[in-house]
Length: 470
Image (cartoon, rainbow, N blue to C red; front, side, top):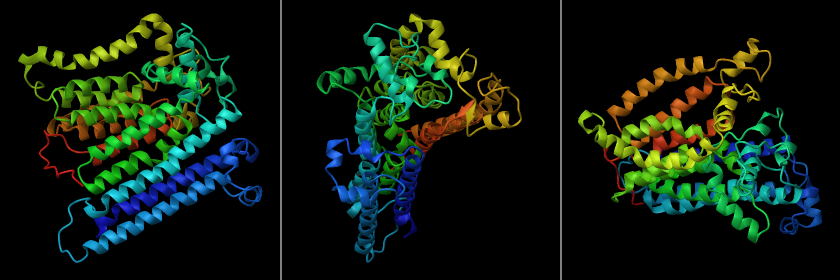
């Protein structure tokens, strides 16, 4: 009975957190009614009296309606669960770990996707519409949307996004405490190369573009793959909930941070690696290379992912050439994307992607976040937030022993789910000891750990998988 109710509790917990975070964000940066009503299709949803009646309580009237619809869907989920318990109550059978009644699984899954739509997708579309009215520096994230859009404009003009500064772009009008980001594009090239065709087509047809168009498409595809990754009905539901309603990752999608973009390529790599077709391993390596060519946060999975990929050759030194051949798809795709920009302007590429975040750039990223950095500031170990501090020392002290320990664990149980779990833990340890541990990193880490818990085990595992037919 308890196991069957696990998904209900998880859903209510995630939705409550998701809604509360959104309303707190609205309190910090309220959405003026005057701006909202400039969007014609939003203004027509309510009468003038209704707009007045619904003002001034936690958030705006449109968001309040979405919240009420969301909790109505949660209640529907609870009722479906209760009906499922009733329909199986006369059947005395053991309930396997994290497995819900198959008879109502598909209905539950539809409701979960509907809740993700009302909380994440609808809120993203809402902010896209408001940004289109209020201007490019509003209702969005600085790097994941504004700056990424500007990199594509630079590239279409034949300019190197890593050489240019962003002082004469909408980035300069965004609410930054420190302006060092105006001189750096800290992400790797796949973040804007993949979006470039969408930018061109949208600009030609609509006359405008929002990077969240791309993020929402990939977000939806990722969730569809997640359904196939998990082995049992309740683990499918839990994985979709944790990826789609992750309180921090959801905000990333809504405001346009690019962690969901990186996560899509990781999930795609794991999904393809589980397929039986002949080129699954090659395709998975190529997809993982795209994740690594997007943002360094994906690199922390690499040691464990490669151990899994090389499982047949790993302990046979006579097959060293085979190991090299196995990794060629990854190396080729990664270098094809990254190398042209690294060679175009080596100094600025390094300064943007690595030195800025490490604190060694002349215009470095500030010391901040939820990790060790706060103790550095509290103990007055630096004269300012922008000063250099050798965070590489605690990073090595914390991360290296964990890497060795988890590589040994990976070798003992060499599964893709363990690769995701170990990669998430390693990233958490490194980020905690680094110059900054931003909240979006934790949302990304939770998603990796969710894959490590609920995704299907690989064929090399001794764990007996249950049929995913639900």
